[in-house]
Image 1: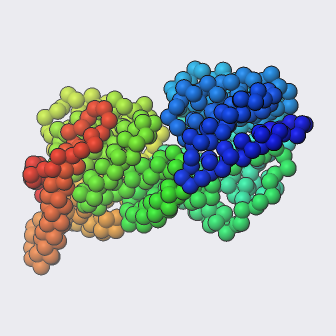
Image 2: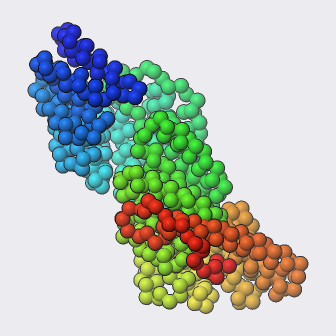
Image 3: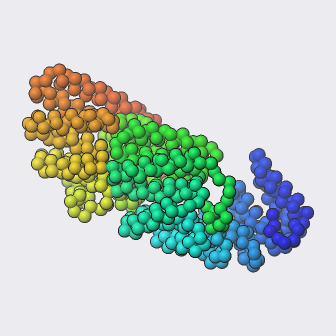
Length: 598
């Protein structure tokens, strides 16, 4: 409706009513809606009605049609005309906001920035729009990876919200800034900021749902910060608080009373999205800690919730959540010996990325990394190397880069003839000197890789030193998989050295831990060692039992190997460039060696 002191003309009300009727019909009749709105211009309406109608037409054309040229024309006219009219803030700033969004969708980012800057400059007396436009420009800079400019804007927003008396919106700006500082790894700035946010959130007395949603935002940042640092044990108190917080939110009823302060008319995420996010960080924790059955349980819950939400809401963040969940559960499947399922889920990630160029840009490196891990699991080492090499070219994320390099080093160790490339890699992930990231988990893994290399080279004392360092670090933070791998490798070393008692002391707990995870490869390795140990010690019954276990694990892995390599999706291992292929040609049968597997 026209926000005017004059009573709207009957013809205008009639056309507007028809337009809205056609827009909300099932299915929507967009062409008729557009005709009704275009008819308004036949009456040579006053500037307010003209600007509002251009905005309505531009919005409908942008959201419901592919006529981007006409949508742009109407949105630009709405923005131009509304700037000449005083006390017309809602139309003026909505036009600026939608026009900028439209420009970004059309990859005209340089056209969007001046519109938003001008709107921010003239909206200081309109708190809601001033804050919203600051968030929008900060988001635009973030998408461009200009996190410094984004952080500056969020800082401006936090100060403006403080002056406007909205501690709630101030917290949203500060927490958003904290999130970007974490992405930039500016930890010296993150810690004081999160401390300030924690104090503001705890002291703020307001709408219970808003308060709890701020606590969820704050705790999610803390939990992801710990997980990024590979501190799986240290994060537990924060994660527990987060899980309790989301339970509290789910019992609260949405308060229909809107805040009286217009600067506080924001929310971070809908309750349902927050629930999925808490499931997601729980899955991340369970996978890092090696509680893979728990990771599976929470992934199933989260994916079920996501399917329900995606029927009602096409928000891009839901697809992002889905991809991250799948990335984590794929890694779990590869460990638990379900390669065929992992491969089908990798294919599912490919399909999601095909639907969204931005999603593919953000997750291409992870996708190639997952394919590299799958290739290792089916003993396709050349393909694994190609996948990891492709992934390294696509990422600037230091933790992911270190993870990829660590796995590529394991490929070179297994191949046994890539000494120059291997030593070049190991220099870049030296856990004793200038390790590239602060992650406890990745540094422990780097010690393990050194131990593995020393083992293969027959330098057993050196291998023991590296593996004991891994054990010390993994025990400190409950990194169960690294603990199990280190124990079984130490057990192997002691067996080779003829120290059967010490070997047994390593292999038995390795087997117990591997069964608890469960880690199929470590179980296979441990059962083979137990068989050899018991034979060497003359324990015929125990040796027979271990041999039977080894046979069972071998059969399970072999069947899964054949199933995975027979899938048409197995051809993904050859894809290293561009968008993922849509069609997969069926395989005649497994083409990979089983020798390395068994």
